[in-house]
Image (cartoon, rainbow, N blue to C red; front, side, top):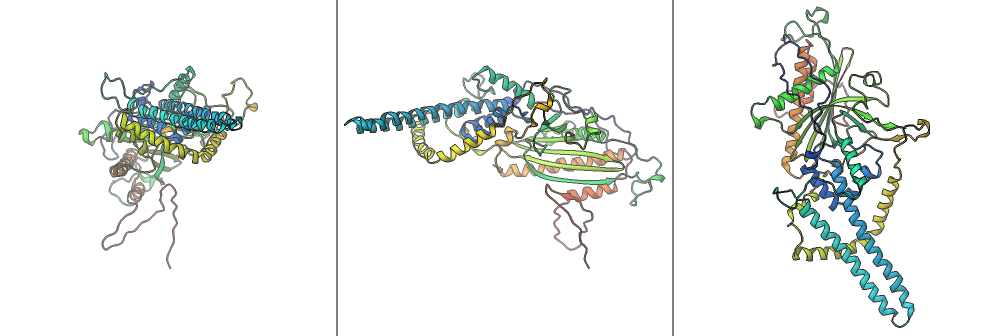
Length: 526
């Protein structure tokens, strides 16, 4: 996984007399691609635990990354999906062994016990002996499975505390066959974001970013700056001596990218005031559907300055560029992602922001860390009782579990093999090749685990939002643009939900919609 952190210094804030800085390179800076830091991260470890303790999560991971292998893996930031998939497959193999033993016990009860009833006077005795043996075998298989799972989650998936320890999480996925290693390598290449292109499937492009937190957009007319910066009236552009310095959307995007990084990370003098976990990148989001999968490789997708983004921006195979501001906190469990897009149409600048939040990993995945390591006599007694009660519950829930497995099997039948590149495109099915879900989002909780997490999520969004608007204003000043209208829109965005506690009147002008599903209307009185 690579991050794009620009360290070049930015010009100090000032007025329209400043000189234009050279825009930074818009393409992401490639980093290490071995995936080792992400594979050993805390989020990877917790999701690997979840693959063993949460059967539904493990099945979803296998369905997304293994059964539907024709789909590309979603971008992975701060974790390794291949490691999680390896543990999900290992957990499924363990469940299958347990199911096979239970099935064998049921068959011996059916074939020997039931048929022995008609074999003579010893038939009833044989029936009860087979019943006891069958129930014991099913209970023992479940108990052994619980013991193995407990050993894995409390010993092998615990954080490694000493370099010479013989246990602890190492970030390596379990291997059963050589083909598994090849699949893991493919997933790690697909989840790496150094190419700057995200191929998504379905409707929503921001795959893996979590749930929508806030969104707003507005358009401003670009007029020349007044002769005196303190003038309140909008000037006539023809009378402005300097006029507007022409610029493009990618120039503004590159400038905001550089200044956000320097303002919040690299040029902050005091370490405690830096926004650690900040990543600012430029990414193209393209929907991947059609008869052929997206081309892989460095030149396998549209470029920000290529014809695919300029001339085909409103086609079904179009790609849109976003400036992605990501803040990973709480050991990457709480992730805020802000997507920014700037579009120039004539003299109108359209600015839009989409904020998404990825909530912490499910609390159940943290639970094994609070348990004692390994299995002792007390733990064995507890697991034996849980296996007995769980076995009876499994029998009661068997019809529902069977229906869910059949539904998963039907979804898996949609898997299509990768086509032969020499095959005629007309003979191939129209397929969705893009990523639909990320492993991280599948394992996310439905709420915060700590009140401070809620506080930090609000804090980081307000910091990024405020800084972004200020940097845009600096850029418009550099280009000699009158910022009166932009400042009015900025005030509307920042002052949403104003609380009036005293006397006076609050006048709110404009129709800026703020929110993922917000709408506005204007009504008059009288």
